[in-house]
Length: 336
Ligand code: PEP
Ligand code: MN
Image (cartoon, rainbow, N blue to C red; front, side, top):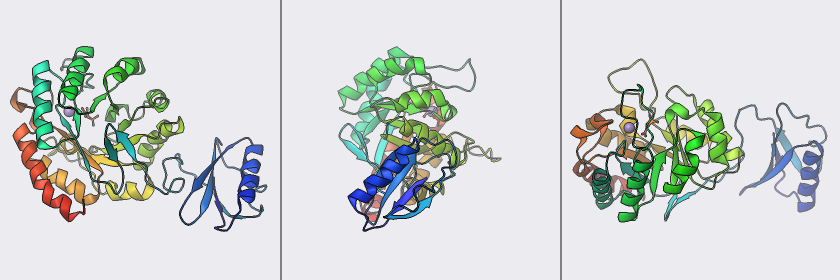
């Protein structure tokens, strides 16, 4: 439930409302806004009887929230959340951030080369997978800790923060030792136990939309992380499964402005997994910025034809540099 206070409500009236909420056994979270102050009621499992609250002085209305998410919603938190990764701030209204690097970490030299190419082109955050969620068990599963070492080394070499996927709770300690940002992949979007654990950490998290997840499910998953105390969360649209097989997935770009209406969290777009096709990545990357994304995640490999994973959708270093160049005019047009 959301309790909206009169704009003139006094601190004393706010205090009384908080006490009334706590007397019901729930948590009261003040949500200061520019026009009004509201109080979010947290911890209830079902409908809250508001009879002891709605008549209190200073209360304008009680809004019952029936959605499975609250803390990530715009209603509960009107101002955009800013996520800090190294020296970069990511959030609605800020210049888009570029995450780039190979799908999977394959060797020290591959990672060092990828890092220097994407850094030179203008990327901000280096990506690379050490634990790969592959569709079949016979495909390359990632180098594990050896890969994490190469990722960290390459990131340090070019002074870039690094992001990598964590698939299981048991991997968290290890991955946290090497990574600046934890990625939860599409296939794990509803691994609620994992979401709760990353919610307890003080590390930024990138949550990818599940391939058949509705926005309600996506935000419900995000809520698991934020409800545990970690608000350093970025959402990522990476394409959804539809009847169309000509592209790997269907890039659902209309969710970018819609998620901004629904949530205060930053949202980035991954045009690589969304299209599966190198030739489509640059134009869809630009389309994502026009739609209002706070950043992009793009797969870049020094030699895509030799990649152990997702070569067909990976840009070369040169292709990525060209894209970043092309984006400059667009970013100016968008006011960044
Ligand atoms: C990835 O980014 O490496 C990845 C596996 O993506 P997704 O979870 O979106 O399929
Ligand atoms: Mn990939």
